[in-house]
Image (spheres, helix red, strand yellow):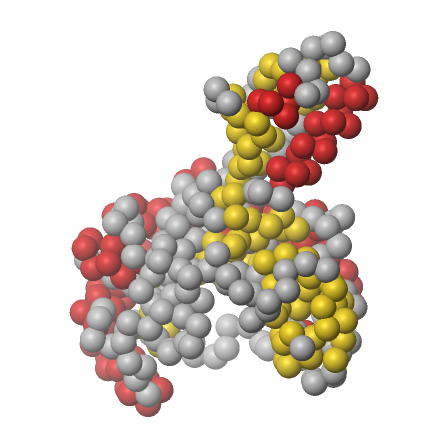
Length: 401
Ligand code: SF4
């Protein structure tokens, strides 16, 4: 009997198929028929055995099925088809605005190891989660994103790097978030690491683990304190502001925690003051964000002017006695080296299609170690001729020609 054991896979046998869970939040299935082609099988939580087959044959045949299964990977919580980007995938982590590493040539770096969300906030600037028009999600292998971050930081040579795990979605859905923080915190250039989260998936245990791993700050989005308003604004009936209050109260005793509500004119005006008082009670800074219209996001109200916004903030500072604006910039923004952009605008190049983008007609391509998004693309495989439309800070967008 050949027994194959896995660290990142778990097995659940059903009458006609085997469900394989990858890193707790993702899965694919293999039919029993396909498994029988290898031999009679039995599973435990993390191993599969085949009768009357050599270890070598079982290993080879089962890995072919796994490779095929990964192409059908789905999120258990998000229910979306998910592309797994790993070191051998040939997919670079530079080039996209929604996945990988985003560098704007400063000492602030955004790390995006995942897409997808379990909320459906009415103000979501990137149209994520419940009600989103996005069709596909992405997940990056931890070792790969850590290696590429280190490579970029070695190139930038700044000893004052602030890392933001700031994803199009909820970063706590990343199955190895603790290990990721730990790995990133060991890179010599990294000064601090902030996670931008709703705190929905935080537990006391996870907070302890993240603190021990080297996380320096939580930035928590809370946009209402009233139970029903909070559910409505977060777009999820299961959202519990009581849980959030308890967990944020605890987080603030372990790691620096900032509360960052989005102020939407005419929607949560009455809630903002309550959030400020909650921040005061638990000794957390509150940094209110102005709702800004976003062409690709969800827009529940009109955007107000910055003058009006700052006037409202000042009035609230006076009323509550809480400072809501940074006296001076928290971290000094420094310009640093960034990878050169390998394309010119309007340049025509040939690229290889590697799969779906986030939207139905969007495809992703690769050329010159950059991931390129093609929003309205008819072709869905092979090579494609494209015109480069945007290259700002290595976010590359092209059009099919
Ligand atoms: S705002 Fe954040 S938490 Fe809300 S749906 Fe968008 S990504 Fe999810």
